[in-house]
Length: 272
Image (cartoon, rainbow, N blue to C red; front, side):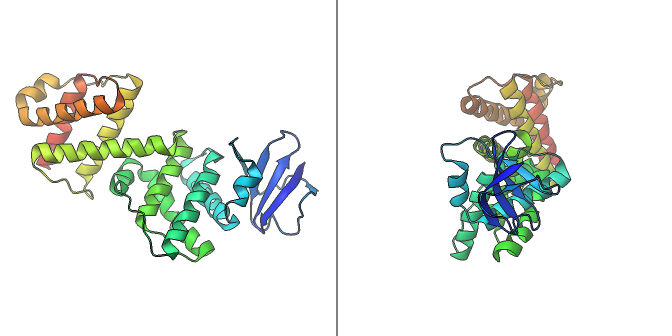
């Protein structure tokens, strides 16, 4: 049994779950129609349920600060992402809705928030990015505004946060470190990497998993350090500099075999 705290719109309700004592957002076609604040209602079978994580602000304050249309948009984007990728943490609903509200406001005022990591985000989180692109049509339908590709990149990070339980700031830091690593490789090798190529995407993916292994203290299964050092000394040196920068940024040592492994990936991209 639920008690209605607020009717968001015809498709959304903020309710109190009498069984768990949690404040919950329910989203679904026509779910809010005809309901009033304070009334009790049975659980609607077709509704999507979003439990609100505890924050300094109450659930009502959080919801009151965002136009319900953006909460509905975020809910539909999450639903689309779940259809393609499986369950997401519903904790991302309000942060994503808040971002969509700001993105729409910027679009209406012809202001843009440049996303310098959009190509790296697209390569790093391809599935999440594909789901986020569906948000363009959803937001256009509900708010009458088209958001930019830069904003799609930011929404991608929210979806990734919901999928991985990693917060948006951590995902952004990975994207930043990957981009810095790519730029360092380009500088060291005096070689431009086109962001729309398969080789670029594979290198980005390799660096991403390299970061993950380093954070977890895991080791690569393949030790090609001596081979890479002798066969591609300049490439190995570039890989070594990337690893040194990564160690400084992450505050942990990069396993020795990662240098050779990365050098071979760089060499393959350059020879493609």
